[in-house]
Length: 195
Image 1 (cartoon, one colour):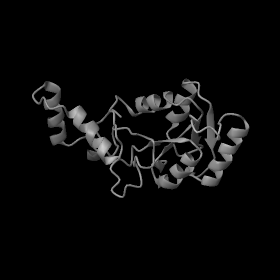
Image 2 (image 1 turned 135 degrees about the vertical axis):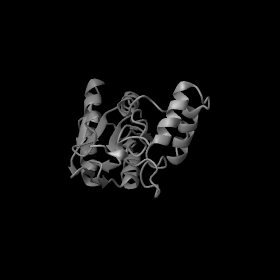
Image 3 (image 1 turned 180 degrees about the horizontal axis):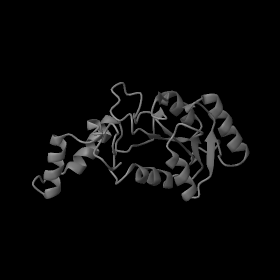
Image 4 (image 1 turned 180 degrees about the vertical axis):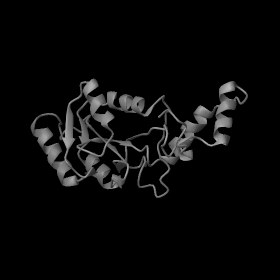
């Protein structure tokens, strides 16, 4: 079966070929990073070799506990947190969607267990989640981020399926502290690999 949406167009393939062969010496890497920063309302953007590399870099920069949904998120969040030996807090969801009451309960419990210090303005914990639970149900990123920020918790949004959201509800740096995404097939931004 040949699924055309799973590969770049002929024009994109030709452009990629010209860059790879050195025929076009434009600094597309910097242009792409600038464009990503612009469409996500962030000051900085970096392109790395994979979405998992982006997750690992973001997670490695977090000194505190890692908070993840119990379902509907990328399994790599849990695996990378374990690999990095991070304290892991799992939040009960409603079919993958973050419920603020459950998030609050998880944070309070983690605070009581000394995994998070809610009084510390420099709390170094972070919530990792996807813009869409299981790539199908939209998270209320504004409400989630407002809640997390009131509790001094960073938000890392995997926006693989939401980069370029024309309504700016997802993949929006005005809400999320760090936005990561995969550009592998069949993502919205599809260059067959990278993140």
